[in-house]
Structures are given as structure tokens and as C-alpha cells.
Image 1 (spheres, one colour):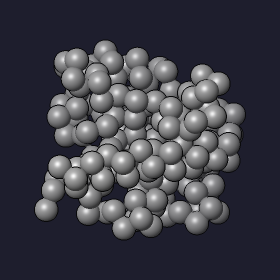
Image 2: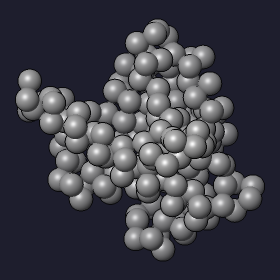
Image 3: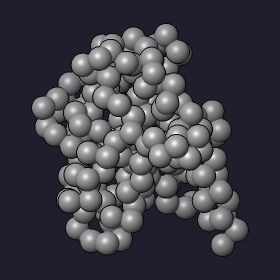
Image 4: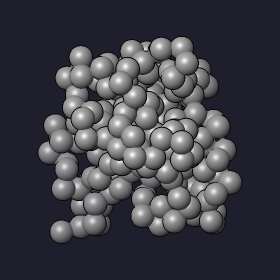
Amino acid sequence: MTTPFRIVFVCMGNICRSPTADIVMRSLVEQEGLSDRVEVASAGTGDWHVGQPIDARAGDVLSRAGYDAAHHRARQFAPDWFDRFDLVVAMDRKNRWFLEQVAPSAPARDKIRMLRSYDAGAARRGDLDVPDPYYDDGFDDVLRMVEVACRGLLDDLRSHLAADVAE
């Protein structure tokens, strides 16, 4: 059995955007029957919410859309996670900047991607940030953005996994 491809989504506090992406991507991976080949996680750049569940508003939006957010607990990203994960996905430019600053090497920095870079329309427009819904209650918009980008990421991942099998 091959080592699973590991993805971690990163936002500020790991209670809104990154757990939404984690939960959506995990669901897509399960639907595709890839759970044994892909592992998904999330974390925050800050430690404000470590151990807390997902923001209730994000959880409600996810539940209404058919996702299960009950088991999420916030964690903080640590630089040694670059060794544990194959892909580090930032939710916005601030998070990407933070990740670039703590990356221990150029190969680690090469693992960092913006989530919306997997959304062809957003990438074409240069609109790569998933806005933080914490203060403006944009949780429905965030879910829509995340779902589109995660589908694009899954398409990219399929190609990566197929290439691994071919080798």
C-alpha cells in the first residue's frame, strides 16, 4: 500500500474557513473512494481557538448542506507539519504569507498553495482569497467558494494519484 497523500487547509483560527474546506474535501474524498489514499486535515495560524469546535455558524451552514462538522477541534499549524503534509493549502494571502515565513526550506514553501487557485474562474480573475466570514457572516458564500475549489483540487489530485499508480 502506498503512503497516503496528505493535505492540510490553513486559516487564522481553524474554526471557520479551514475546517469548512477540511470537511468538504474529506467528504469528496470519501465519495470518490479515495479515503485510503488521501488524508485531510486543517489548522490555524494562531492559537486563539485551539481545542474549540467549529464556529456554530459555519457548522450550521455545513449541516444544512449535508456535511458533518461535529467532530472538528481547532489546532494550530506548526512548522514541522511541512514534513507531515504533501500539500499545505492557505485560505487567503495573509495565511499564505504566514506559512511562507515559517516554512523551514524552499521545498516546504513549494508545498503551499491557495485554495481558490483550484477554482479556474477565481484563478483567472486573480481572486484567490476565501474571505474570513467571522465578522460579516458570509458563511454561505465561503461554503460555495470552498466547494468549487475543493472539486478543482480533487480533479488535480486524481491526476497526481493516477501518476503515482503509473510509476
